[in-house]
Amino acid sequence: MSVERGSLRLADAAATLALGAELAPLLRAGDVVTLSGGLGAGKTSLARGVLAALGLTEEAPSPTFAIVQPYAPPEVSLALLHVDLYRLDDPAEVEELGLDEARLDSALLIEWPERGGVGRWPDALALTLATEPDGARRLTWAAPPAWGARWRPR
Picture 1 (cartoon, rainbow, N blue to C red):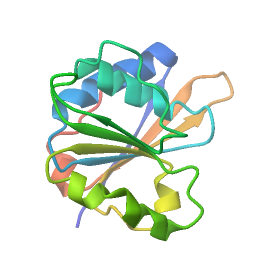
Picture 2 (cartoon, one colour; picture 1 turned 45 degrees about the horizontal axis):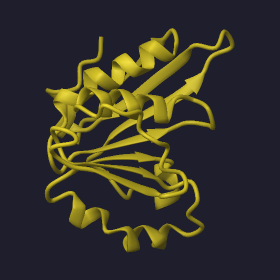
Picture 3 (tube, rainbow, N blue to C red; picture 1 turned 90 degrees about the vertical axis):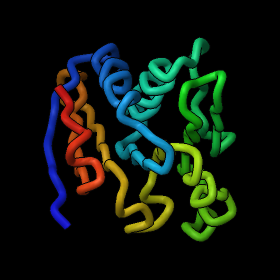
Picture 4 (spheres, rainbow, N blue to C red; picture 1 turned 45 degrees about the vertical axis):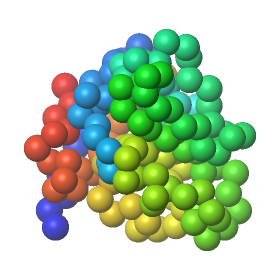
């Protein structure tokens, strides 16, 4: 399995939101996008960009406390679960969230995927955000074959 990797500098929060908006039309039911990075790296901002581009008119809340925040038509054009695994203590707790079943008709955006266990979503578009010394963000990605033809960030 050939995984395409790359990197992109995001100058500010607006660029992070714009990247989310660029990702949104590429999503389809069954897709998983993992969002890794430290606190404040821009994971939720990227997810907010996706959700706004899918038609969400209000600002999406961080799902840190809810763990899973579902969105469905007509609120958005594609059913999507915004998931934040930060509060999980054990990777086995992911099973209780019903994410595998949700993939049948929804896309998943998963923050803190490492808390779900190594290798849990091998077909995911894996995005990692890091803060650079000047405050910009560095996005790195690993795109498995299922994403290779779709994921071409500018």
